[in-house]
Image: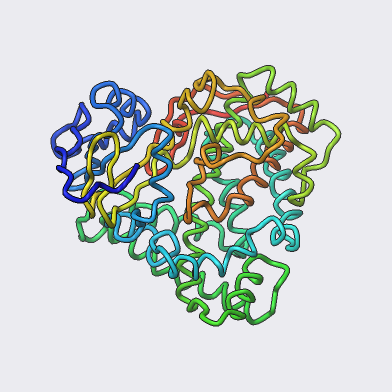
Length: 437
């Protein structure tokens, strides 16, 4: 990947991926079969091709291990990607680059680091919530798998940001409406997705502002939000109250749907893989659910299970940037202003990076002497926009795995291999059912 030489002839635009429908383009295929679409387009067009995601929304997908460099490249930007991205993420760190992005990220980075998580009271409370959830789920009997893990993921992230327990239902409904902004429909009519999302956005902004005010008032430095407020006010150029609230909303939005998906896939894999279930129960049998980042190291199999499920089922199936200057890839010279995407799902199954890449193999993460590299953590993004909640997600994933392993009753999922859905975040088919042996 490189910038074109001065005076070089500009090649034709990358070809359109096969299978585009009128108006919808490839939107339906992106939702139902993102990986299949990438593989079909790769066979037909090579390592670069155009994909239409709904009316008026086109992006160039880049495939292969070198595509990761796009997410780190100085000529790629997260500013002004699409109306849907702006509506979902607002004026948060995910829609900013350079100094503006660093300023917002710095306000939260310390609290969400392993040291910050260990110093706060959040770890033990999350462990308790996970244990309570697994016990309650077994008592409740059959239930939708994804709805069950969504409930847990919401409770965890709501606790992290300080949402009062009595407000959980109202926040849940508000986030469901707010997430409608991801739909590629812009009709501004009463009751339309756009109106419902905008109303929820205003409500959430007010409630998160109130949570920040409370944290600032009582000096709750042992909570993550308290640490964020303290870190922000100590800086020369702090974020405004509205800026902090926008980023809190981002963390909840990104932190519950994505983790709910990974927890659901962990459950589904354990339901069918006897070796994985046996290894996890052996490791977890006599252990308490880990409550600190340091305690996670005593559960290498649980961590490996989490990483393998993120690899095979990344919640964000692709990541998009806008080029600020021309760039060459796979024989094409892409002009400045182009929307360019990396398929995380395709990259995470690339045979140059993983032997037998479609196989569920937890052991590929065990016995390692070095930390996972950029290709191996691509499920959390790359470059300056690498997921701020990475360490929190890892903690929650390991906690959930250990709680399942200690529960003794094995999860069972019907159908045994749920189909996958990819938009707005990847997840198993919501119709899949969870019960217990």
